Amino acid sequence: MAELDKKLMQTPDLNKERLEKLKSFFPDLFTVEGKLNPDELKKIVDPDIVRETERFEFRWFGKSQAKRNAFTPSRATLVYDEGRSVNPEYADGNMIIEGENLETLKCLLSAYREQVKCIYIDPPYNTGNDFVYSDRWDESRENYWEHIGVTQDGVKVDTNAETNGRFHSNWLNMMYPRLLLARQMLRDDGVIFISIDDEEVHHLKKICDEVFDENNFEGHIHWRRRHNQPNDKTKMIGLVTEHILSYSKDKEASKEAGVGKVDLTGKFSNSDNDLRGDWASKPWKVGSDQSGSRYIIKNPNSGQKYDEEWMGDENSYRSLLADNRIVFPRNGEGLPRKKYFKFEREEEGQCATNWWSHEEFGHNQGANDEMTALFDGIKNIFSNPKPKELLRGLIQIANVKDNDIVLDFFAGSGTTAHAVMELNREDSNNRKFILVQIPELTDENSEAYKSGYKKISDITIERNKRVIQKIEKEESGKQLSLFELDKKPFKTGFKVYKLAKSNFPRVDFAPDPAKTEEENLALLDKYIQEKESIFRLMIDRENIFDELLLKDGFMLNYSKVQEAAFTKNKVYHITDSFKECLICMDMAIDRQTLKDLESHKEINFICLEQSLNTTIKWNLKHLLGDKLIAF
Image: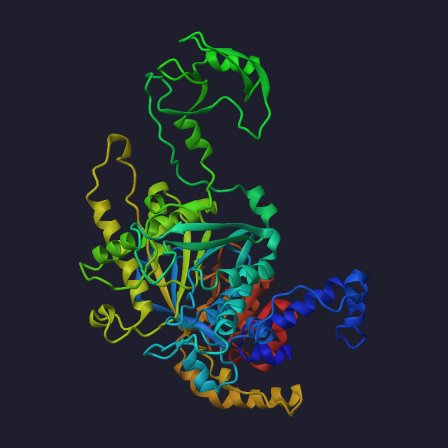
């Protein structure tokens, strides 16, 4: 089926890919016919486990199908939307993608697998009123394209009523395949953060333990989302917090790469005018559950002696005292304390805790106020946006650095992109963001709809367009010091892409399960000949660059330079951060181009199958071997 899959222009079949990897590592687990032998697999498992008829696992209705959904191929593609892009010349990898996120992740996977440093998602909380994505794989082709959001007018997504007997199962079936793909997108030192409320946090923890491995659990952050105290008389306990679960892809790799730190929160001052600047202090005496060195310390102010166990030995104490790093309370009473200076802590950073206050990491009302200000005073343009301070904190503790990628595939109002751009502006780094938002229709009675934003994705894009405009205005009015005169103003932008039906009509071909692969290939060739004859005349070559390069594993921020050495065809040299190729979208490959390719045999050459006559195709295969990629 490999040849058929390739011709159908679909993303790789990940189920097949996993089996092939397993076979390459453990060929002895497969029969001579190439089928996985379950009995051989069981032999390498602990016999005690094999004999056990019951085992601990998290199960729900539809789990197996949800897992299959994660790895089935996609025939969709991503199409550049120049009209809605903002400063695309400064985008450098920043993207907002309008489309259903499971299909979009599949489209991105070939190029971005194991390339993402940090993922943040804020999925539907399954309150009974919000939506849940419904992955319907048994629909007709026409309904399929409409359901995944490639239609012009957007999609109306499903609600998940609590009266539904599969209330929790539906939510889990939505989350499970997306988390499976998310893990594949992460680098080994990558981290994922997932916002959730009380309704599904226990279920989310279980599926994340399965997908990411419970040993890679990093923590459970409790974020206070409200700045005021609720007074709901119908509840015993008022809700003021939300949960954020965090997992590394590989905890050891994350630890080795370095754990990010949050901004300092301690109170620093300089009451004794120390030349080293502001400082704070901590007890020199050990805590009640610790042990230390025992000796007598005399308070030089009061003469009082203390016989206790201390944090360091006596020589260390005397050295710190001589360096003015030991202080006693001014009233002469109390135990010694050790100074630590602000500049030292700024270099070290501060480890995050699992309690995130609204003062430091923002709250819902503050996020609403910021949206109102961005949208010229229009209130309630988006329900419950996350504050950018929260996202800044998460990006910092994930240790996202220059050129690292941050992915958010439940983008909502687009706070993640806002936070990334703000951090880049502050430290002159170039973190990149990829946001994905389904074109969910806004309610006709909502302020968003009345203001002209018919889809949630419109708000995602518009919010970050306005953020960039605000940054540009502030940069143009900024007063520079003498030391900053050579500093260039901060510039940023993003490209907009839309999940779309492939540019190639062949994606609508449905193989006949009653026929052999050879028969289906013959039918497909006939279908292509009939359907794509018009395609040959109408093709916009630029439109299919992204589709072909994305399928071949190129990131969408690739660079393209026309090769002057090729005189008979337009041939471009394509590079991204990791690979390169030559590509030609002409409808006929000239003999001279074949000769010119002799000096470029070391890299892939991508072209259209239709551009090759029998002789040229044979000669190219002889010259390039598997480096010839014809679609």
